Image 1 (cartoon, rainbow, N blue to C red):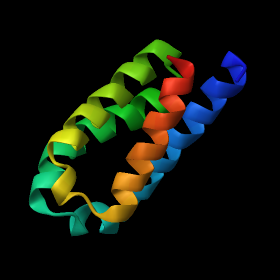
Image 2: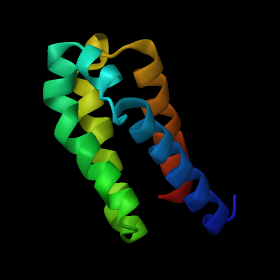
Image 3: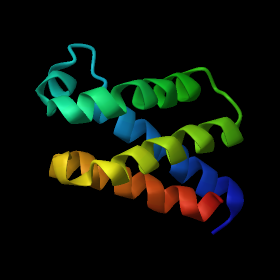
Image 4: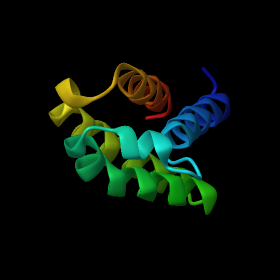
Length: 97
């Protein structure tokens, strides 16, 4: 896959993940198990900031890797849709790395 297309696909997957969890009303986030919001809240907010601020791709990739690493540690606590969104982002990230 062409790097530019892969980078765009990765950014879209990362934004979809952020949009799933960090909604304006925070209903989804507030409904997460305590361990998930405690462990993933800050890294997801960092990923969202990196995306919204238009940071360089390398910074966004770094934040995505951090989210993935933490998610791997708490995988049994993740709701299925959140685990799927993280997996989709990880797949798209590998096409860029």
